[in-house]
Amino acid sequence: MTSLAKAKALALLVPAALLAGAYGSQVFAGLVPCEMCWWQRYAHFAALAFALLALALSRLPDRGRSFVWLAALAILTSGLIGFYHAGVEAKIFEGFTRCTARVHATSTADLMNQILDAPLVRCDTIQWSFLGISMAGWNFILSTLSALLILWLSLRRPRTAA
Image (cartoon, rainbow, N blue to C red; front, top):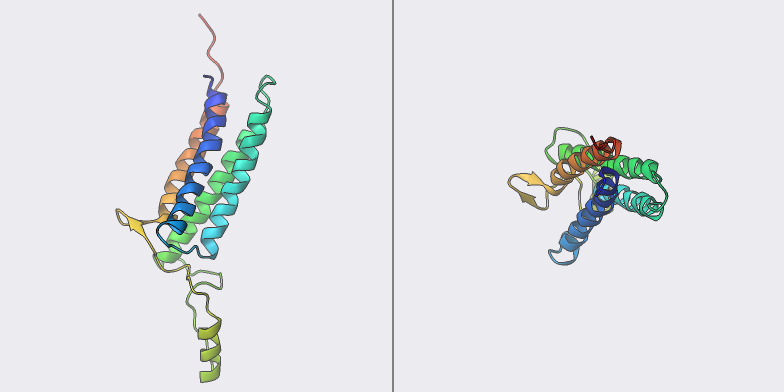
């Protein structure tokens, strides 16, 4: 199997596996995704589309490499969103979405409206973690490393016989 073929396979399998894990945790564990969780999923959906295009062009020599790069960049984008999300969860960054807890009421009525308008799932709350790392943190680690591996594999030149 060539390096490019390995990159294409990873570009398809990585987002598929991470999306399966996200949806599995939602369906089987009852975890509800917040707004930033969805952003990470959207990037993986884009990666799947690019990976499928790369595979569709597999029969043509050296075709699909640019779609592999786009898939890797989409996976990396999801990882970077995961990094930011993990930072919001750890209170390192202030979330700029409406699903973080920022209260700036000037009256009791304003406070009550903010409470009633607040989403059920906040982005700055960790719902699940493993080894002290949240799902967003794991997405950052797995997506970033996978994207870099996919890019490296896609840029490798085939070995010539000596």
